[in-house]
Amino acid sequence: MADSTKTLKIYGQNAIIFFKANENLLDVLNDNKISINQSCGANGSCTTCRVFVRSDESCFSERSEIEIERTEERSFAENERLACQTYLLDSATIEIPEDDIF
Ligand code: FES
Image (tube, helix red, strand yellow):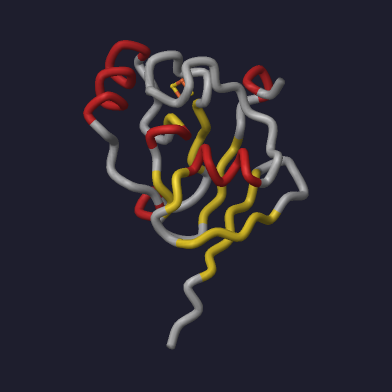
C-alpha cells in the first residue's frame, strides 16, 4: 500500500510539512505555524492568503468559483492561488510572498 503522507515545502524557508491528500492549504499552514496573512476568515474575499505555486499545478485542486472571481478581479498570475480556497492533492512547493508574511 502506498504511503498517503505527502510533503509541502515552503520556498525560501526551511520548512517541510507533512499532510494527507485533500487537506486545505491554509489549514495545513496554520496547523504548522507557518506565518501567512488571512484577513477574511478564509471565505475567499480578502486575497491576503495568496501564495505562488512553485511546483506542478496538478498537485493542487482546481480553482473554486470564488477563487476564479478573485483571480479575474485582481489579475492573478496563473500560479497565484488563495491558500484558503486550495486543497493539496500531492507533494508540492509553494512560495509565500514576503509582504504577506506577518
Ligand atoms: S483568508 Fe481571505 S481570501 Fe483567503
